Image (cartoon, rainbow, N blue to C red):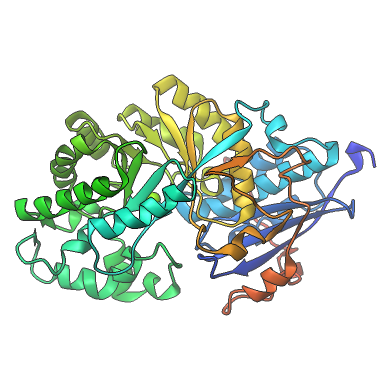
Length: 438
Ligand SMILES: [Mg+2]
């Protein structure tokens, strides 16, 4: 088939859950039966964000990825709302690579490295000590991982008297309504968190909870980190996420305690758009600051980078896809910040992140959540194989995914969603006046 004859013919989705998160797999079909583009909507998102784009791209030539991205860009937004646009963009790059029989990294300008470092997110359920966490992290090191991240947050202090103070009732509400959200790393955000009092508590920004950590609380958390370092040593980088919704001043007080423990970064200590808070942290602490997994479009990183964020943490399925990630890479060079790629999704998003990381100059590592779920690795053919905490950049066409393991898609299909790959013709006539100006 000539390049000018290639057309998009259909878009279909499959919601799966349990490996460990809610993931939305995407297929973009073409009039070449051998070419299907694989994409994915951001974790814990809605397939609607992709399906509503179907009528805007069917009939178009998928090779014109920039033109199509600009057509659908207005339907993306921050966090999960970026998922549809980003997922389609990734699938179009997969199609282009398959059509011209070249890997996606080559379409992005070639590669800086042949293998990409994976950093392993680790958490320990329930009440536990820094020694327990240290042992869990040590196991990751024994498996070959060379970069580590742990969750460490104020929920460890809820039942430690005299470690937190807060407006009366706030700590009780946090425990009652949002513990599931705080401790969500091994599972999915579920629907119940998005309604009623759960939603109200889940969405209070850091600066508005009124929760403060006492000196006793800081002692407790510092000792936890010391215990972790006592087990894992100082050879490997260790990042911290999910500190909790406390003011930036309290985050600074804790960061000062952590400087001697060589922390790779502290993540999302304030809402990313509160650049005055980010700036205050950056100017008052020597622990690197990281944010960015909820930012749509590279241009929206510029205020964050100029506030002094040292490590940006974009998610390919929120930022807008591969081209936006490349733009961000160039912005990071301008500001002297490193990239760590956020990734909490399926092997489709993982492979896209690997191609992207290979093509970017200053990448620390790609995140990984599914090390304890062996079936995650087999969701695509050929299956994912990590070696000593690294992923070799594939040379096969497109993302390097020949097919999905449909038996596993069926096994892990999400209970309250449509059947995998169900007909989407109900979206064929969706339209609006899409002109963004008059
Ligand atoms: Mg995070």
